[in-house]
Amino acid sequence: MLLTEYLSELVKIIDEYSKTNLIISTEIKNDFRTEQIGIIRGNLVFADQSILYFTEYLDLRYRIEKLSCSYHYQKKAGTLIFRYDNARHRPKLAFENHKHLADGKITKASIPALTDVLDEVMDYLL
Image 1 (cartoon, helix red, strand yellow):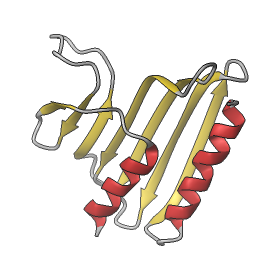
Image 2 (cartoon, rainbow, N blue to C red):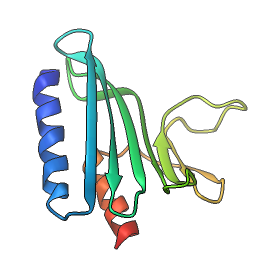
Image 3 (cartoon, helix red, strand yellow):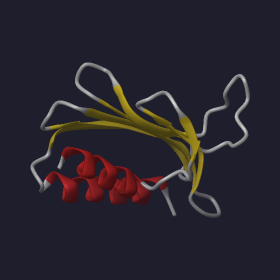
Image 4 (tube, rainbow, N blue to C red):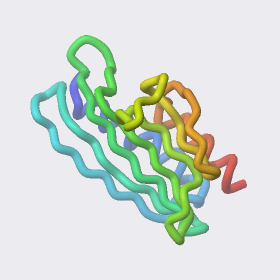
């Protein structure tokens, strides 16, 4: 798969969720290193002014591999609601892929697809 195809699919997913009228603003940027390796960044602003920031550093040569990623959802004032990422921590966590919760806890979690994150945001909003 090419990054342009992946990006096109991502835009389609966001467009579908935008039909709910809960997404009021979208910004997506890309930095393609090759046709199959690159970074996609974006943010979505929702009707309550909460924001989802996301970054995916992708390698699509053999399969969809998220080398690094973050899905950070916060309230208008900047308070964390949740964040999925695979960043290294100090002190080191017992797991690579994890989720930060609003109460400060960090739990083991699979890195979700954007649709899963948007479903979680919609559950929060509704």
